[in-house]
Length: 202
Ligand SMILES: *[C@@H]1O[C@H](CO)[C@@H](O)[C@H](O)[C@H]1NC(C)=O
Ligand SMILES: *[C@@H]1O[C@H](CO)[C@@H](O)[C@H](O)[C@H]1NC(C)=O
Image (cartoon, rainbow, N blue to C red):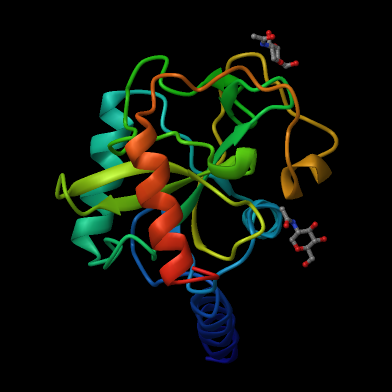
């Protein structure tokens, strides 16, 4: 009897503590945060929970993640309510899934239309957002300092040789001497600039 009560208390406490940070789901792979944090804080929050920010290495994982979000009605409502993923632009300009060290888009191209745009040369972190025009979810590079909800996953057991960085402080500013992002039409940069001016801080 006593043992049962103790067990119940432990379970109750655990789920209560868990709920305050992540949406309640029975999925064992993915977790959606309830709070919004900047990218580095989001990375740390996943890690504190024994998890890691979500990386999407292939089509199967992209589909799996989308199914998860739909099942729990966690799909971003609009393009300002995306989730941080583990993707970042490295100081040399290449985009990697942090930790796995896999170049982003190597096996699956999940970029939203016109992305990555690296506006102001300051969008170094990758979010999963609603691509309203294409009516699907897509990746977007965005300002790491902004607060977003985030997606964690159970840590990968096998990963390619990691490019894990020791210092993430550069993410708050410009990366100089980046290679030209020539494949992004200039109109996208203008549209982004316009929407940014209309709704500052989002
Ligand atoms: C960028 O940096 C990573 C990590 O140091 C390195 O593995 C990669 O080869 C570099 N890429 C380019 C294009 O220089
Ligand atoms: C996120 O916020 C923390 C303080 O909570 C700060 O130390 C860190 O530099 C910020 N990271 C970014 C990318 O803005």
